[in-house]
Image (cartoon, rainbow, N blue to C red; front, side, top):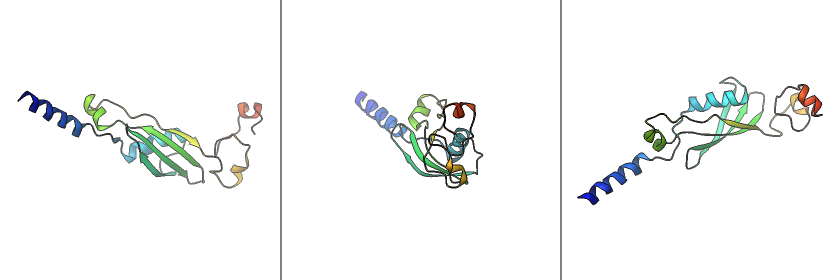
Length: 128
């Protein structure tokens, strides 16, 4: 009887321990907007893939042709269950892709983010 209880508990935890991230599309867009400094609706998300452990990798394309590779960690079903729903999702981490922007803004010096403004620090570094 004791073995049966342990087996049942193990099965329950296996079902509960989904490894997929639980973040929805709205949450993904919200975090991406914050990371790239654009409003929701000014970009599209594509090539979304999920890794074990809740990492989500994806590509972002903006209306002005800038491209970003992003990732974030979404709480998995297991993490949410074990923390009673209190495990947050991470912020999005995005990197502007070189050559991701076409047009006049793309003629800037190497090392500048797509659509980035030239500021005193970039001028001092000789990057604009």
